[in-house]
Amino acid sequence: MKLVIASDIHGAADACARLMTAVETESPDRIVLLGDLLYHGPRNDLPADYAPKRVIEMLNSVADRVIAVRGNCEAEVDQMVLAFPCMAGYNVLLDPEANMTLFLTHGHVYGPGYHNSVDAWPALPPSSALVYGHTHIKVNEKSAEHDVWVFNPGSVGIPKDGSASYGVYEDGRFEHRLL
Image (cartoon, rainbow, N blue to C red; front, top):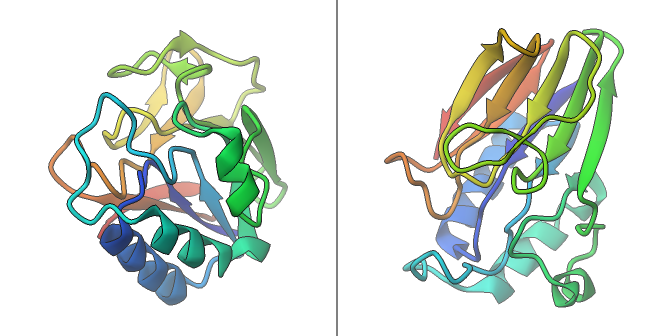
């Protein structure tokens, strides 16, 4: 199973176009979107390439492969324009080949407590992964305290660690890719 994992596009159309090129290149089985897709939110500056209608068009073009969760900036109107479910607080994906459970969330309700994510761990079996966004900061490490892998792909549209990015999950491993 190969996944492209992205978060925090925040309506940044040029950045989303780079993500769509990466999706084409990576050719994943599924595209995981960890929320904050269209709106920039009151705490963020407006992205230079802010064009949510263009982002809607791009994301809807891959709707049949998307697994999404709700971020803190999603609203019911977003669900009205997106062709895939985006209002779930979390989702769980099982990779039987790697014996891995992936808990997918935005990071504002469930999270590892890193950077500005909440410290609210879901109950997870050993050899799981907590996959979240929200902080706009890349993370790829094991939590010794929880025996869970922690992965944040960073942000596509408003990176707060210097570089726009997404993640790839394949063969039980996570990697970051710069856009």
